[in-house]
Amino acid sequence: MLDNPLYQGLILLAAGLLLVLLLVWVAYRAIKAAVRDGIREARQVSSQETWLPTERQSL
Image (cartoon, rainbow, N blue to C red):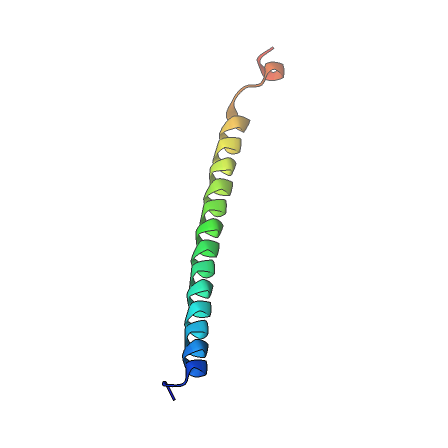
């Protein structure tokens, strides 16, 4: 069975697809974590800005 080039090609194709799927999943998780951290940082910055006096309040 493993002597047949067709089966070897199918096994290589399946292994390649699994590798691509793994890389896509890792990239998705990394992007999702980066976006979540960016949103968290933006919320912290915006919450700090609300405590700063504006021109209207200081007049």
